[in-house]
Image (cartoon, rainbow over all chains, first blue to last red; front, top):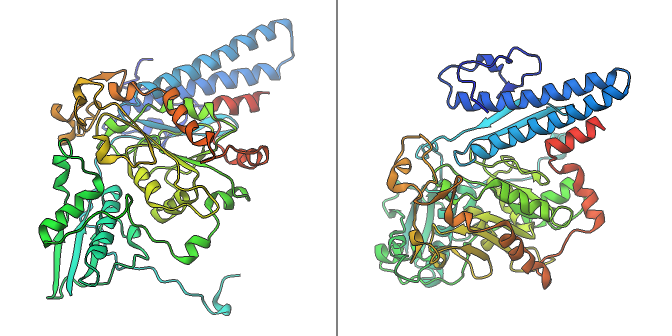
Length: 144
Length: 343
């Protein structure tokens, strides 16, 4: 799958998932791994689109023709899932994780985890002596 | 009596090794030291009887930054990670600490030991489960096995072993299907309790393998706890492995780790610009995004090692009732979701 480096032709589509909770078109140009993120979003969009087409078809009256169209659409869904899985595999070594949120089997958001340097730890409060003390509150102060 | 504050701000696995050194310092020299620590993981020291609150401002207190230079000899000498801090303290303090247990030193409160496991709270029954770690930090990506391989063995055991996936938020933990997903949902103390009740652990070389060794299972479970480590050729096995773990390594089988671990950091550069992206820190032999040493370890190899534990009663498979209890909490694949919604 080619990477939509500049823009996706579909990202205004209602079935295009959001990226980390934001609209994909609002992804800044300097966003880290932007093109990879857009490739994943596009892949999830294609699955959504095939599923939507299948649902539309099923709402229509059943004929011999619709049966064969349904079969083609199911094959299309599988093909789109395989394309998305290929992306998972391709970017695994680079540490990219794309976690989809589904609503009624449609992907509504994709949350990304991408490589980053660990936060410096020198500033953390690190005393071992900050022992947590727990003791029961008087009954009247407890939450019901 | 000497007053010591021991400092270390490395990863949890390193700090867990320091707990063993503190335990053995007190065993070797009872009543001679009063110890406190400053580390990146205070949760690993909770309820530890060897810790006495000390202040850095106190003139009697000696503060010591702890390291384990012994690691540089691990390719030539039969030493374990557990010896690292002990050797360093011996050098710095003139002590004669010897290792007294092949494990870190964790302590649980009475409330923690009597608390039902997270799985019991989730499913309503105490059932056997294995913990899986399918990734790790971005600094040592060379330790990662491919998520497709983890998935293959989880699929193999589907319905017989319930895996629970854990991992720190922000690290690389690809979501596996058929597992109970707890990535980013456990604080360190929760994780300790989750491991304590686990029937087994499956992981790369990481904190979890040290945690699996350090924690005694509850009396109702077989001891020691099974653990299968997919290790490859990065570390010398005698430095890292625990005797009762299945430690799958390739040291000696490849030219890049012929006599010891390669100690390299990343499989491929991540573009982070740190020293671990430099050529001398990168894997020399990459096949389809995996170090050859990790590629050599197949899902079938790991499946067989897990099965070892089931053949003689160190672990047991799920019952049908347990399987049903776990089912609603399991992460399903996109295919499964679609099958359900399009049926």
